[in-house]
Length: 433
Image 1 (cartoon, rainbow, N blue to C red):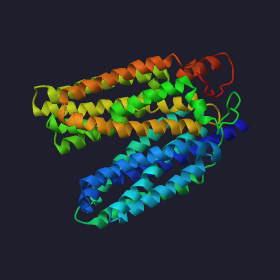
Image 2 (image 1 turned 180 degrees about the vertical axis):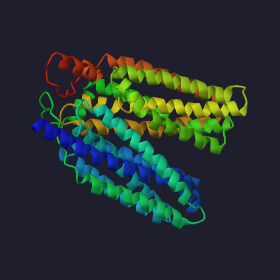
Image 3 (image 1 turned 90 degrees about the vertical axis):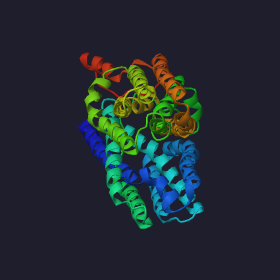
Image 4 (image 1 turned 180 degrees about the horizontal axis):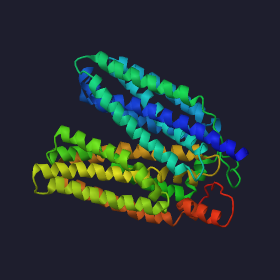
C-alpha cells in the first residue's frame, strides 16, 4: 500500500510540474523571438544595447548557477524555484516597462538569472518525482512541452506585437511575468515524494558537492560532452547557422522561420515515437548516434550553401538541416538529463543539475560568438568545423560509455534482468566512476 501511495504522489507531483513547465515555456515563447527588435527598434536603444541585453542574459546565468546547486541541496528545489520565478517575473515586467538602457539591462539581468535557476530546480523536482523506470519519459515530456509551449507562445505573440506601439510589447512581457507567477502558484501545491534509493547519502553533501562532482570522472566526461553538444547545435541555431543560411545559401527570412518551425515540428512529432527505442538502448550509444545524425545535418547544410543546385533545393536542404537537428534533440531529451540524475549521489541531484546547466550556459555563450562570424563569412570552414564537432560528439560519447556502470548506461536492461529473476525493482543511485 505504501508503494502505491508513493507512486500516486509521484504522478500527482509530476503532472503539476509538467503543467507549470508548459506555462513557463508558453510565456517565454511570447518574448524570446522579439527581444532584439524590442530593445533596438521599439525602445530606440540601438543594436549595441540589444546585443548587450543578450550578453547580460548569459552573464547573469553564469553568475547565479554555481550558487543555485548548493541552494537546491540545502533548501530543496521548491523554495529555490519559487525565488527564481518571482525574480524572473519582476525582470520580465520591468523589461516591458523599461525605457532607458540602464533599466533594460537591469531587468534583463533579473530575468536571465531567474530563468537560469529554473532549469536545475525543475530538473531536480522531476528527479524527486520519478523513478529510474519513469525518468526518461518524464524528461521527454518536459522537453516536448517546452517546445510546444515555445512554439505556441511565439505564434500567438507574433500576432500581438506591433513595432509601432511599445504598449503591445509591454503586454507581451506582462503575459510572460503572469506565466511565471502562475507557474509559482502551480508548483507551490507540489508535495515532493522521495523515490527510494539504494546506498547511503554522502556525508557533508552540501559542503563537498563541487569537490565530489569534479572527482566523478563520468560526470566530468559528460560535462565536456554536454559543452560540445550545446556548442555545436543549440549555440548555432540563431547565430552561425542562420547567418550561414542567409549569406551562403540565400535563405529568406520566411524560409528561416520555416526551418525553425520544422525543427519544432520534428521534436513534437518524433519525441514519443523515438522514446521506446531510445530508452532500451545504451545511453552512450544513443548520444553517439546523435553525433552521426548531426554530422549528416551539417553535410546537408554544406550542400545548401556550397552546392550548385537551385534555390529551391538549397532551401529544402536548409530546412532539412533543422529537421535533422530536431531528431537528434528528441533522442537526447530522454537520455542526457536522466543520466545526469543517475550519476548524482543521493542528495546531490541539485548540485549536478546546476553544474550541467552551467556547462550549457557556457556553450550557449561561446557558441554564437564563435559561430556567428564564421557562418557569415567563412562558409566552408564553418561547415567543416561543426561537422568535425559532431563527429567529436560520437567519439566522446563512446569514451563516456566506458566510464558508466551498467545501471547508468542502460538502466532498462538491468531492470529487465532483475524482474526476470524475481527481484524487486529499485532505483539505482549514481556511483562515482
